[in-house]
Figure (cartoon, rainbow, N blue to C red):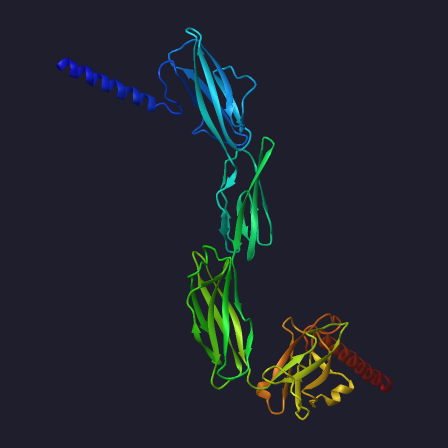
Amino acid sequence: MKRTRIAKAAAVLMTLTLVAIALGVPNMALAAADDVTIAYSGSDTTLAVGETMDLTGTMEGATNVTYSWTITSGSSVTLPSTTDTQTITITAASVGATTIQLSATNTDNSVTNPATINIDVAAFSVTEDSVTIMPGNTATLTPNNYTGTITWGTGSSSVATVSDGVVTAVAGGTTTITASYTAGGVTQTDTTTVYVPIVTLTAANSTITAANTPTTLTLTVQYGGDIFPAGSAVAWSATGSVGSLTSYATTLSSSGADTSTCLATFTSGASGTNGSSTITAAITGSGYNTSKSTTVTVQTDRYLTIEGPSSLDKTTRTGIYTVYLHEADGTIVNDSTSTVHWSWSKSYLSITSNDLNDRRADMHGGEAHIELYARYNTPSSGTRLYAWINDGYDERVYHTITITGLSSLPQTGQDFTLPYVFAGLGGALLIATGVWYGIRKKRSEKA
């Protein structure tokens, strides 16, 4: 009985040892005696187009063996010209699956046994179907199943560029990055959609023309992706005293494909005071924050504007400037009774002899005109032309004028510059020399 137990234990131990040995041999199919196995190079039996793999056959317990390799199904790989060797090198030719069979013959006992191996040729691909990048930032794409050089391209370089798989966002929009891989005469491509968020705040520079009047502001995010998804926090703020934010949402809400919005309401004050307020919406995204601003103008009273050339030079040295009186809604007032007052830096500008200057103080149909002449070059910041009506000096408006190219005139815009000072000193010296000479001459004659 004891011997029987020992024999059974030895048999179990032997079986477990054989299983362990078989499992411990990598890339090898299990086989019994006289059976055939196929070993392969590499970590698995999946190849990329153009890649090669060595297959090696073995017949268990045989020393004199002949081998023959054939393809039984599929055409994604090709065999070498010689297929009667123990080891062959196959080449992945196209995407798909192929079954290769090995027939091994033990020439000592004429026993022939087969073995098969399945080879998959995987398609070239890029892991990322889409990426979202903020302008100036980058993302690296991950190509798969290739062995050679990849060619990268972008559908719109104004949105994003790509080099060796590194995508750089340029400006808001969407574009497609294309990766191409050619091997064995076969070209494969894959694409990645790149989203660069477009963030806007509208209406831009809106105007309210009545007290207690609301206007809607819309923060819009296109192509926000995983940077600014719906639910991202939005913080609103307003400056100035002409009104206030009377309601606003605090998160982005999806409003369509690739678009999210957040709304706010700004209401002008009860007194309708003229002025402006800057509205800002700050977005807190995933790893990136940004903000957008717009201006709301409250204009409930009449107001002035000036139009005319913003620059004068040696070719266009004169310019006609017009002041307009507007109603709060922007229309021109039919006013022909108000008196217009003008003011400007006389060292830079001068009034011309044009007849319209005789009527520059008269407003006709809500407008008045003046023609000015450029005398000197101005600094880069220019000079201001002011206008107001009646006694409204505190509500005066201005127009900035830059004068350039008058190289024969002083560059500082002042009447007394060094050239003039030196010229005056030279003239005075000549006069003094003449007087001195005359005095000396008279003294000589008397002597």
